[in-house]
Amino acid sequence: MDTDLHNVIKRGTILKDIHRRYIMCQLFRAVRFLHSGNVLHRDLKPSNVLLNTECRVKLADFGLARSLSQIEDYPEGQNMPELTEYVATRWYRSPEILLSAKRYTKGVDMWSLGCILGEMLRGKPLFPGTSTINQIERIMETIVKPSEADIKSIDSPYAEPIFIRMPQKPRRPLGTLIEQNDKEALDLIEKLLIFAPYKRLKVDECLCHPYVHQFHSPVDEPALTYDVMLPLPDHIQLSVDDYRTKLYELITMNKTNIKKVRRKKQDDRLLETSKICEPPSHRSTTKRLGADGSTPKQAPIAESECSDVDYDTARSTRRFRSSNSRVPQNCNFNCRRYYKG
Image 1 (cartoon, rainbow, N blue to C red):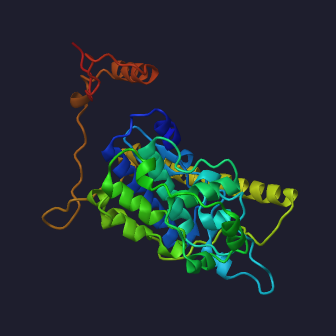
Image 2: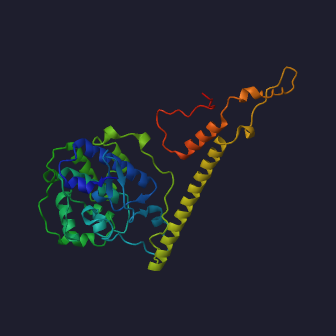
Image 3: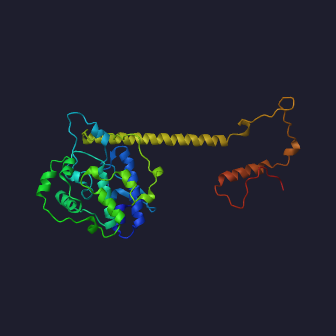
C-alpha cells in the first residue's frame, strides 16, 4: 500500500466526495467481515487505514483485536478485564471505553468509523481531547444528551459521578464542526456517534445507507460463518519469556510451511520439465494396427536419405545455441536439419 488515510487527510484537498464515499464503503465491508466472525478491531483510526493509488483500502494493526466468543466463554469466578484507556487512540474511543465499561460490543468499532468519516469531512479530528475527562467533555458537547437508561446500559461505575460533576455547556451540533454541507454524511455520522452502543447503526445498516449505497454490492461483501478464536485469550497472562517463545514458535511454523509450499512448487515444475524433455523413444505412443490386426513394421531408413545431413554442423549449432543466451532476432533456429550448400 502506498500511504494511509491519516497522511491523505493532512494534505488537504486530495479527497473528493466520491473518494470519501468509496473509502467508507470499503471500511464498512472490512468491519462487516470482522464482526461476522465476532471479532472487534478496537483500534480503528485513519493511520490504520491503508490506501493505494486506486483508493483501495486495507485495515492494519490487529494488535488490540478481541474475540467476543472468548469473552462469553470466560472461566467462572474470573472477572473479565475492563476496557481501559490503552484500548484505541483517545480521539477515536467510544464513551464506554472512556468510562471503563465492563461490556464489549461491536458498537466500539462503529463509533470509531463515525469519527473517521467526520475527520475526512472536517480535515482534522472531531474530538481532539487532551485527557480522558476532556475527551468526554468534548463528546458530550456535540452528541445528543444521553438518558439515564443509556448511561446505565454501558455498565460503568464511573459514568454517573462524572456526569454529575461535568459542567453544563451549550451543545454544539455536528453541523457546526463540519463545514461541508453534506446531509447524507451528517446523517450517517449522527447515527454512529450515539452514546448508547445498542442505538448505533449496525454495519449492515451502514452499507444500506444512502451515503454509500451506490457502492453497495452484497456479492462483494463476504462474511464468516464461524467465530474466530484468537490464539491467546485475554484472560491468560504470560510472562515476557513465554510471549517470546510463542512468537518464535509461530515464526518457525510459518517458515516451515513456506518451505513446504516452495518445495512442492519446485517439484511440480521439475516434473513438468521432465515430461517436456522426455526423449521420443520413451514417450507413450499409440500404435496403429494394420488391416489384418498386426502391427506393421517400419521400413528401415535408406542410407541415401541420411547421406546429405551434416551432423557436425547440427552438433556445433546446438552447442552455439546452448552457450549463447541472447539470440539475434534475424536468426532462425527452428530448422531440424542442416544441409550442405
